[in-house]
Image 1 (cartoon, rainbow, N blue to C red):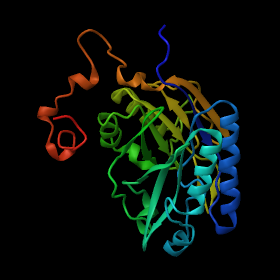
Image 2 (cartoon, rainbow, N blue to C red):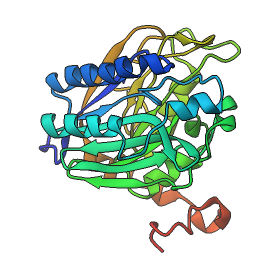
Image 3 (tube, rainbow, N blue to C red):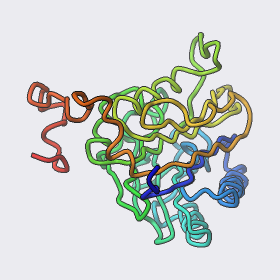
Length: 295
């Protein structure tokens, strides 16, 4: 086997952040403590859940606004930046962003060099639509020294355009930040996987891209969460196990991150990216007209 060109140890962190202003300090401390555990076990790319310092189920828009802060100037992102610099890691995590009077469900990427970028959730789930503005920053992919990193958030994975556009822009890994919530049954199959697990695996498979999906557990204000965090390889199958539905866990995967750029050519005649019939797809899907895509 050849030596890896970009060896990365990825960690996804599954835990139980709780909504409520009285919980914000403990939530932030938990993100740092769990990220430290991951870093001490060798992780250099750490993924935390959606809204990991605020919890999810706000009472109303005023409550959501009270939980929000500026990005990147607020104290939470600065704490994550300080952590990433101190431990020489890349960290992806979610929080409630305030921009003027608008609120966004935002994921941020920070690293040893500081704040790298953010993604605002484009597809809002249920009551989120009452307090958040849909994301307006597109689907960015960030170049870093360890590889190209894309972000998506929770309900986004139900829209195949999102991982497709990220992969077509050259993402080596997609970091998926989630608060996968209980919906009408059936929730799990006999293998213990939820539908979100399979959607993540499918998106990785059909786009030849790694996906690191961090979800949350627990209950808050009557809502329950599914857990089921996982790290999917470029072939779609989980690297290691899929996390439980109700336990705090950190999952790890040792990967050659940039191997996604050439994997897999399944046989001598078929390759997913090469076989795409972009000439037949409607330009409104954004596959052929995106400014980052080759002409």
